[in-house]
Every structure is written in structure tokens, then in C-alpha cells.
Length: 236
Image (tube, rainbow, N blue to C red; front, top):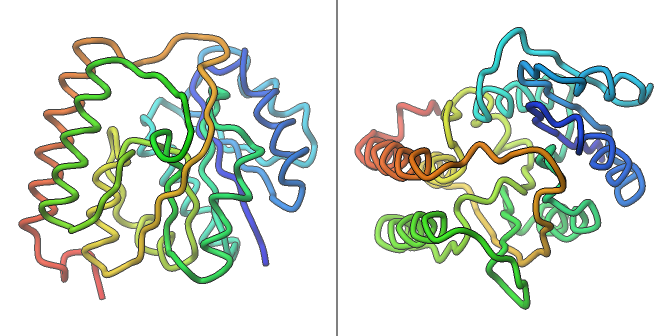
């Protein structure tokens, strides 16, 4: 079974080496693909020191959606059976990769979300992020009949069925909550498992107060559009 870890990274020179070494140690059976999303720092230079790690240098910053979709296209075209999404900022613990991919391997789900809010996790986040997560939880309950507590988590595992859809239809900006609706529209199975996550190791988060407000409004509109669209829009 071919496995790929996709690592989107933007200006992560302080974190990317640790992320790569962590994946190599905890999930040595996974190939690694770093999507360098137009970084202005030494991210690309650091990644290229690892001979076994593949890298795609995007000519400009496409945002998390464009970077991850690039990874999905690579995953699909290279014939990988499982794709793991791991952020380049060090918050996703490579030791939890096996946990999120297990339901995929066992045929229990098409996409698995690593949740910060299930089990005994003590992860803390900002007030506005918590509010956004709560809104998306209620939307999932209302429209999808799904109890997904961490719609914004980017720590995820996918099988080929999910990758085939998301390589073609993946939101550009803040894509995680919308991707849930896209896959559910196609009847795919989604599972959430509790994981431990770290705080950002270095660098700065792109989520500010105003971006958090923008995020909630934009994603809410995107979700409404997906609810109204016919399933045929996403292909047969």
C-alpha cells in the first residue's frame, strides 16, 4: 500500500526540518511531498537537503487550498493509496499519523479528521477560533447529520476515492470545513478521531482577529453554496 504525506508550507524555515524528521521517524513507510507555497524564507532550501523528500515550489503563494490541492493531484497521478495531510508548522504530531490512517486502512472511512477536541486532548485555541468551530459543528449537525467537532483541523487522512474528488474540487481559502460538505455530497464516509497536537513551534500564525472574522463569513457562504448545489456539479 503506497502512502504519501503532503506537507503544505509557507515561510516555515523554523519548523519544516522538524516536521520532516518527525514523519521519517514515526511513519517511515510514507513518502513525503512538501508543497512550498511561495515562501520568502529558506523553506525550500531546507527541504532540498533531504534527498528522499519531494518538493513542489509554487511560483506564488496560492494559499492553503491551492497548496493542498497540488498535493492531491500529485498523490492521484503517482498512484498513492493513502494520503496524509500534515501542516508544516509543527502542530501536527507525526506520532499520531498511524491513528488517523487506521480507519482508512481498515476500510471504515474515506476521510479521517484528527480532532483536537475528542478524547483527553488539552489543546487550547483562541475564542474566535472556538466560535467558528462551534458554528461549523452546528452546520454539520443540521445539514449533514454529522457530529464533527473539529471541522477546521487540517490533520487528515484520505483514500483514493476522496483524493480523486478533492483533486478537482477543493476550496481555495480556508478549505477544511467546505471539504467535508464536498465529500458528503458524494456520499463518502467521514470519521473523526481524537489526537494530540502541539502549539506552533516557531514563526507566526496567519490567523489574526480580522482574518478570523473573514474566515467564518467566507466559509459559511461557501458551505451554503455547497448545500444548494446539485450533486452532479461534482461529477459522477
